Length: 178
Image 1 (cartoon, rainbow, N blue to C red):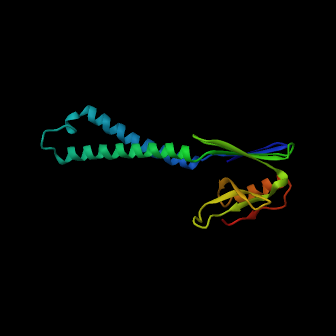
Image 2 (cartoon, rainbow, N blue to C red):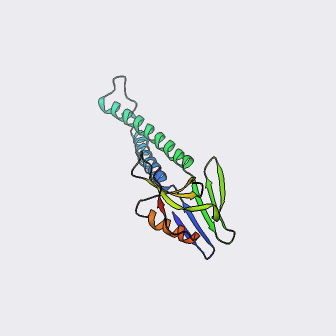
Image 3 (cartoon, rainbow, N blue to C red):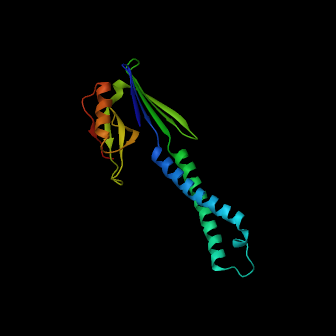
């Protein structure tokens, strides 16, 4: 998450980095092992393509190669789905035009929502009841509609909410249990 503030605008950019990190780590891990095994097969092909009575070593290498290839494919799918399922979220508060613009950019869908600052009750924290480890910064409208803006850690949420609320002129953030 990155916050950029000028005199009349405040922009919060959320990047889904954690999903990308896991996908990349698994891709490199399994891909590296797969390259090592393929290189070994190129150097010593008789270990992989043996006689009709394969030894335990040959069967182990073949099994390991299959598992590494399966893991590599799984990691590539994880990386692709994490990019596809978790969009970039940019929230721009513009005091000059008295609006808040929330844009979501993903692989398959781009959309945006615009609200007047006068429609905003405040920014708050939403902690889902089913998952106690995550929290979300939400925009709470005066009709009590909640719009998730950012996944945040519990430590950084109060500071970010106070900064957002002070920028739009609201008193303090709240906690909105979902």
